[in-house]
Image 1 (spheres, rainbow, N blue to C red):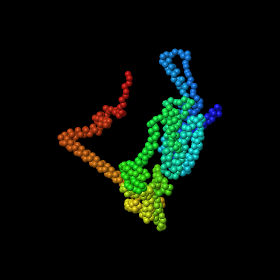
Image 2: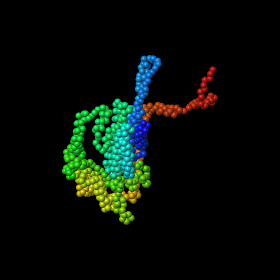
Image 3: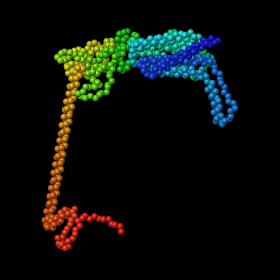
Image 4: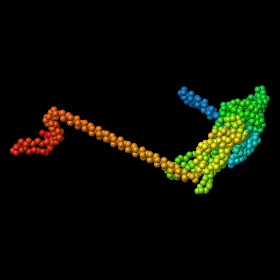
Length: 634
């Protein structure tokens, strides 16, 4: 008996250990991404592996808790009774009665057998779904080839021990671990997902753009199992539980059981439903009819879906070239079209009216053009050396420009200089049906053919002229001639591309002309500054002269007005005095004399001495100023 218990406890302990290992791996991978430091492609892979480990942990932990509770057996119910309690008031007595009813129920809850399995399956599945929502939008970033190679090998190698473990669980009997079949099917999920992730890395390494679909298929597989575990855990709370001796884990994934190389066994499904719910589906004529009609219905559905590939709806800005049996038949525009189904009829979409702008630039690595971020300008004088942030014409990198060799003459000798041109082509696919066919069958990449054709034309153009001719030529005439020749070349190649405009943003001279060009620019700036300074000085002097002339004129007018007023006043006084003298005679003169004396002597101290005073009556005159003294008290 002890050996039997030992054999049955080994799978249980190994299942618990596997669940903890899966849980630890999932949490470590999830936290490693949240802490940062991983690139986009590594973060996506870590999120997917974390979600995969978490759903495996949910299944194994729930199974281990259920198996441990089953091995323990039913929990003995504890009875509580209160003896010798003193009577309380009515309100408190009701509260005590409610406590006596509720507390025993809480204490008799079998947490390990009823709830631990639910929590162990619920929260890892929710965290797995959260990790998948974070991983799904991460599709950018091209990893190094070594990363894809190592990840592909790691995924396929990691699937092998899990497959061995799945085969080990398949050999276990129901007496050893009743959850072994459900765990066996659950382990097929990581095997399938690891194969899909390895396939995704391999396709990305080979440069096949469909690698993302393999990754999305792996994410969907994990998400379906996680959602099933969440729904099962939510339903497990409300359904009546079977006795603990016959209870099995609720993490038995139906989707995981479908991962097999043969059709699902409906008899096994009927048997499971009969054992669980007591319903015998074999006696239902409706299910029997569905079983008989399932294969014809699936075939009819497949045929119908295949026929739907012959119905296409194009938007108002879409069109497509229709091929029937490998030959172009027509060009479909917007609307609903019925044609032969795939692969007999194929539609090749073509742009309709979309305008593109591409710079004529060549990259040796084939990377995309990335505009450099602008740097803050630094201060510099006109004659001084420009700061590095201002070196737009000579030394700064211009991702949207192409460099060409141009003939030049230096010190009487022939040589070559490098000129950079920023030229952009604005084009669209022609609107006619012929243009659509030409683009589909004659052009693999419109941008590439335009760049190649324009590059050859620019190289030939710069080979015919010197650097002085290039910099001094009329740019408008060059653009018109270049556009006309480019259209003719593309039309001769039957590309179906319509050139709408050619824009020349700048033609930068070679680096050797930097000093001369800077001197010319500095001289021009200095001359303009000198002219502006002279004009400002002239305007200031003219303003000062006008202001001084206006002041002098105003002062003269004021002085003249004052003198005229004084003369008029004097004339008026003289006329009045003359008339008064004529009327008063000597009296007027005496009165006027007294008036002047009064005016002159009004502010003076006078001492009048009568000449008729004799020597004997001479008086003493006190000429000291009189100072009033305050009255003394009596």
